[in-house]
Amino acid sequence: MARQLDEQIAGRFAVGRRLRVLDVGMGQGTQALRLARAGHQVTGVERDATMIAAAREALAGQPEGIRERMRIVEGDGRDTGVHFLPGSFDVVLCHGVLMYVEEPDPLLAGLARMLAPGGLLSLVVRNGDALALRPGLHGDWAGALAAFDTVNYRNRLGLDVRADRLATLTAKLAGIGAPLHTWYGVRVFTDTAPDGAPAPDDLEVLLAAEERAGRTDPYRTVAALLHLCGVRG
Figure 1: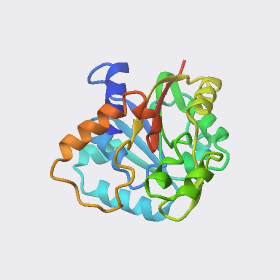
Figure 2: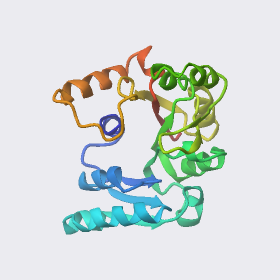
Figure 3: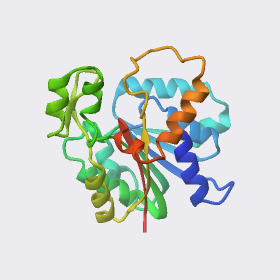
Figure 4: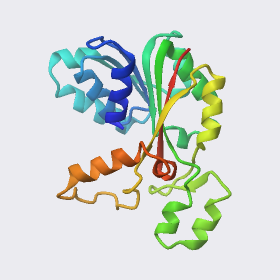
């Protein structure tokens, strides 16, 4: 996802421009910190206290210049309008969050309002068109059959969450004024790898194969995750 995001930023904004970035549901701040290191002014929003503590600890170990470029706001991603003015950001990230939101439309609309004209909205969601693949590849045939007719699933943490379909999100992005510009598949080949598995010796080759598949039909359509990039008109 990082390479894909960097590609979209490089293709949309002037080289060397310091961007105003909002990362909604930043988790432990991995993506936010990476963008702050790249010279951008980053604001991360997170409501989980454990994640916030981890992000602050990671930030504390950075040089002063990077610490000054990153701000952490404790709050719910659905309340962006409480904290920020419309059009305040050039790039808005919301990665791995929508699956935990039962009704995502207000959140999406709020994210789009945060974008300045020409701004980039980056979403990473669970692919609702490929929910049967994971149980099927694990030999859970009943689970695979049940997954065809729903966008609800149980994730690896044991939580009941939801996925998004590409066509549905495409229509929603158009409706909130940030129409889909491009999209990628994420975890095409590696979704069945167990959590915490050690990196293989040929990691670079694996990453190259994933990157290629994430840009290529029909492989990207069956990825575990979708990375959608919309642009504010």
